[in-house]
Amino acid sequence: MVRRPALRKPASLKPGAWKPALARLPAAVTTLPGRFTSRLHDERVASLLGIALGAGVLVSFGTGLVSHFMQQPAGWTRWPSRPVNLYRVTQGVHVIGGLATVPLLLAKLWTVYPRLWQWPPVGSLAHGARRLLVFALVGAALFQSVTGVLNIGYWYAFGFFFTTAHYWTAYILLGALVIHVAGQWPRARRAVMTRPQDAVGRRGFLLTVAAASGAVALTTAGEAATPLARLAVLAPRRPGNGPQGVPVNRSAAATGVTSLARDPGWRLTVTGRVTRPLTLTLADLRALPQHTARLPISCVEGWSVEATWRGVRLRDVLHLAGVAGDARVRVESLERHGRHRASQVDPPHWHDPLTLLALGLNGAPLALDHGYPCRLIAPNRPGVMQTKWVHRVVVW
Ligand SMILES: Nc1nc2c(c(=O)[nH]1)N[C@H]1C(S)=C(S)[C@@H](COP(=O)(O)O)O[C@H]1N2
Ligand SMILES: [Mo]
Image (cartoon, rainbow, N blue to C red; front, top):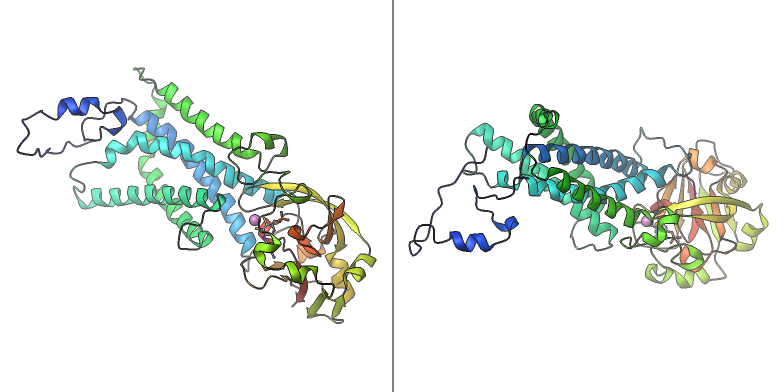
């Protein structure tokens, strides 16, 4: 129920003097309570959008958890190295699906905003609690959308670390959503199940929202699905753009590793819980059996590109050094600072014959920006964990 406020008018105005001015405003800005002109602010539209939005949030939450626990493995997580493209799919769905829910969220907010302007703001304790929940829900949903969009746009305008904030806010969003759905379910069900008697243009409105959502998905999907690459006008990274046909997130120059990576004195060392510590030159690595793997780089920011990698199997190098089958491994970059300078490789991944210390990409030696002289590439793994400019392998 929208309760009408007691409008307080300035003394200088005659009663009703504001009405002509109000009439000249476009419909969407006539936000004075009780004067919402569109009949689309109704339960049926709100319910249908809510159902689509709820499904979108659930999918984003599930795929987001996968991404989080792949990057920060917990004691109970044991990620398989196959299917090769699993992370590519879950993260593509997370980012592209997340973007596609933004038009739904905006449409839903537009549909229900008259209720947000209720007066008085709090009627009773229960009413206050309900409103608090709605504000948590709306706030968390907007926060996730805005930080997600800024992050994939590489615009770190916020002063907090994106993944931590985005991760914890997801629980607030899900919690508020569950309570909200539990409370609204009977009404939403009724609104959706009863055939409307009036025609207020709901179908046109909902189709427009669906088209907007589809257009967002279509113009970003090309960052993960190569045949759609030319349509990916909204994607910050596209397949084919970059040295050797693969995009670069962080270049050697930006990372400050150029001279170390080009140094002929570069060695790969294997240390820690090994029976034979190794120090290998690039020529030593090239002299080991070389293998080819067709694997994607699947960036957490949604873009992904498949490429042909060539190099030495990580497991061959580890067997040379003499490691236990359950050993945990960390590959370390020449990069001294930066969040992505090292990554952990658990047994399912280092045992996989497709996991390479790559020396070549798409038929040529690895370009400096792709991790020359040596980078990790493994199946079913976030791009941030495909460490470039590797110079040390630590076993424990
Ligand atoms: N040492 C190091 N490795 C890194 C990064 C980095 O910043 N430093 N970026 C990672 C990220 S976020 C991605 S998506 C991939 C990109 O690999 P590419 O530049 O070869 O496409 O490399 C990963 N490896
Ligand atoms: Mo990435």
